[in-house]
Amino acid sequence: MTSPSPPADLEARAAVSPAARRLPARTRLAVVAARCAAAASRRLGLGSGGVIGGRIALAVDPRALQRLSHGRTVVLVTGTNGKTTTALMLSRVLQSLGDVASNGDGANMPGGVAAALAAKPDAPVAVLEVDETYVPAVAAQIRPTCLVLLNLSRDQLDRVGEVRKIERELRAIAAALPESTVVANCDDPLVASAALASSRPLWVGAGQRWHDDAVACARCGRTVQRCATEWRCACGFSRPAPQWTLTGDALRGAGGTSFTLDLLLPGRANAANAAIAVATAERLGVAPEVALARLRAIGDVAGRYRRADHEGHAVRMLLAKNPAGWRETLPLLDPHTPVVIAVNSGEADGRDTSWLWDVPFEQLAGRPVIAAGERATDVAVRLTYAEVRHTLCRRPLAAVTALPPGPVELIANYTAFRDAHHQLGHG
Image (cartoon, rainbow, N blue to C red; front, side, top):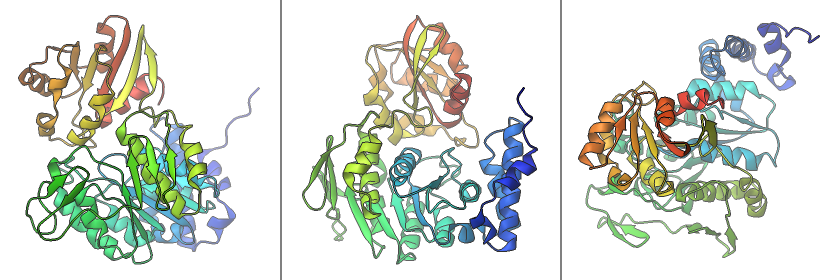
């Protein structure tokens, strides 16, 4: 007979480590409260508890982020796209240095960051993805060893606002962290503008397919001129010389050494994420060969790219939540495979779906396409204007079932992806 599980509060208290006991009393109380809340949430089937636990920790001790991160090597990862993937990559790589605290459940606001730190107070390393709007507040308290800037583009305009406002805020916090290395994709002019304020930039030429949000210079407003991989503005602002450069599947380091990525994860965007992860890890003392060996073992990221069986269909799950993300996802699709597009407009997605008009859905012509999700009608209207023949079925998995048996590409934005992921048994 299986012995009964301990009550949630005892489970949480038992997990408080010696490192947590050395914290100030208020922070120790915050850790215990966070653990109790998270354990209760899991037991009640309400979720992983990362968000509620972190919110409670910060309510008990508003300085919890500062105190829980003190003495650790902390990497903050931010950007419009690729945060979860790059943070997972860095977590796997930096495990070679010791235990790693991370918010791998995607809870990337201050509460989720606090919960991740509270969950592993002994871990010498923390890799934390942070929503770009919260980076200034989080970084000011944590003072990270490395701040990783991936890319900036329009996303959730009703919540995040204009992308240039985010760039200015990231520029200010980069300038305010003189001891932090800012790892930045120098092929994104908005990221480069923010990282130039750092006294310790590390430039990675990771490439960029989406240029529409960086047509004008972030410094003077004039047009950014592009030629091959280079870009510059008449004001003198130009692409910084990279210490690391990604070309196809080859990554070249500052010393001229070259490495082949050979990832299981598909696509140019994942190669870019890996290049930035390798450069960051090398700055922290992990050899590129060691980093790449660990990256090559990653086959999916929180269900993304995984294939799941559903009533005779092999469903490949893909996440795309803004025009830049779609530009990276469309080249991954098999041209002969039906596509289900699921778009929701919950608070976590952003209510504004006008971004659909910036996605080149014309590339889907000639294959079966189904519009699904809460905003299936919006998707259907956009597909109509793109002259893509389609049907409409609001429930994504019902849309999959309606297709002939065989492979299906299910592309969803955040909450639509999360819901389908749970329904397919990978939650």
